Length: 557
Image (cartoon, rainbow, N blue to C red):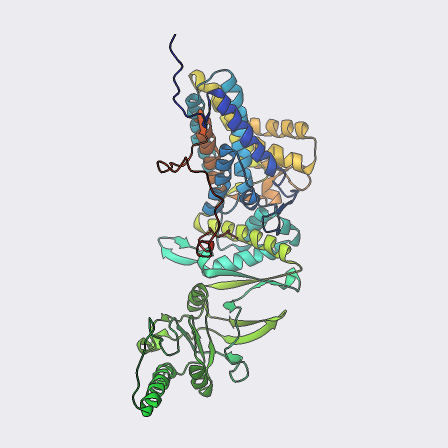
């Protein structure tokens, strides 16, 4: 009898085999159940308290999962899903999780019957290819310039969100913003950079109806010397700098020994002349507004205001780029390199307004701006945050439409069509893969089923009726109206989804399900490698010095 061999250290725990797969499936289902109720127009909101005691009230799948702190590794990878979905297409974050959870749920039966996970994955991937093919078949093209169609499109995306009750308001904002910053790349491609060139400014107070898209940029700054400088300029000439207008300080401590008293005067005079030179170089171009990212000394301020030029200092780099895009200026690094072409002249008006209790500088009414600011007003900060998240989603949808102008039906109709087609095809799949393939087909029904659950109709009856309508394939556009739970034609109700959102949802969900099914071993408790001899010493409580207080990781907002 041999002694048992220890391979893994005692501190490690190892689970393997089907136990792991069951655990992963349970975990993923738990995650899916958390946000299942946030799907559809009748969705519930979740309220999350974060570590700082702040509140997040939202029903955006990604925002909810981002705040959660999970222990289970499989659940963590589910969260990654909704993040990818959010970064890629910006919408459909909830459906991805619900679909992936359902895919895993139907796989559980096969694992009990000792199917090999790779067989299930193979069937799933086959189902995915067929599903995308079905999408291509039922997608309808949409005209990007047809505002009504686009509005309907964006509206059905936000219909599921909290702001759905404000009707066209958010949809209008999103469309205006994205059409403003769209850039043609040629070959019929359009690039819309939401992150860089659309700034959302949230100002508490006022009503949501006061929100608007500015034809230009607004910044949370006042002019440097409010009393002396003009605060309203029509058709301003704008110069953007990213250098300080003050005397350069030495890099390190510089000592100058002055023997004569006059030298001191000369030193000061040199500093003054240096600044005067800078200002004269700028004033050569007769600007009305000088904006710099860095400091602006009192002396420079004096020269500028004497010439009747308004100045704004210490602006964020991103804001500076936006202003450059909006009014056609070029950000210049050294005043002596200014050219006439660098001056921005496309702005219609510069003015400083007081909103609430802060001053905001508006550069507005630009001709053909390539950047814009969305000004959101609302009663409370939580409300504004939620509106901003909805606006982000809406803008992503508008961007997707501009990039790939194809529509598929919403309200679970797409999923039902895919499901019906896959069911028919499953009879022609050979071998053992037929069963998982069919299960994948059934899993797609999770979305319409959840929609039906959330509006509180009789789920079984509704689903049977829908399956019957889709089984003979007469109309691919029949789905559930998420507000009433009635079975209607999505074309009439104008409930649409963007094609690439749906495609991305299917791909992400199925690929993730395959990945989680393939895990058959979880080893936890792996310690960091310790330096030899470090393990024996009793661990002293470590006292934090001032030095290492800074290198704590910052908590992301």
